[in-house]
Amino acid sequence: MRIRTALVAATIVATGLGSLSPALAGGKKTVTKEYDATAPVPDPANLALGNCDGSVPQSKFEETFKAPFAGKLTVDMNGFTGDWDLGLFEDGSLAADSAQDATADPQTPEHIEGFKLKKGEEVVIRSCNFSGGPTAHMKYAFKG
Image (cartoon, rainbow, N blue to C red; front, side, top):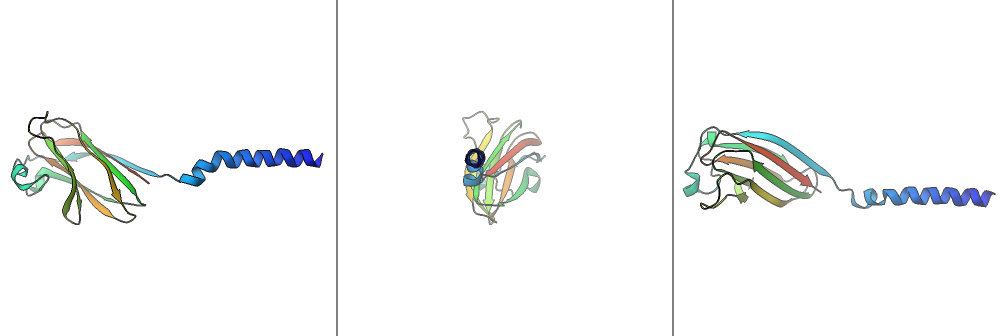
């Protein structure tokens, strides 16, 4: 009788640990955020100066992100009218960007996929109003 009880208990423990194994093995974490970027003054000079140059302060909206763990950052921008661009800046320099070419529909959503960051690294997500309306919708996901 004790052998049966021990077998049942062992089976329950093994089943319980088996169902936890993905959580114990991976420990995947995700940080997400959505917000509206406001940049009321278009700045077409970005064409000559580089994507999201930001020489006109009212033409950009910045969100700082500090990685709480090592992972990859994906940023999406949509919901704008006209032409907006997107840039990721590290230590003041453009590290990644998304800007449609002149032949694309200017309202095509902007997207930066899988930008790698180490724990503690910081980037600035810059939404830039090239020649559009005053707001854009932003969403980012950071996955470890």
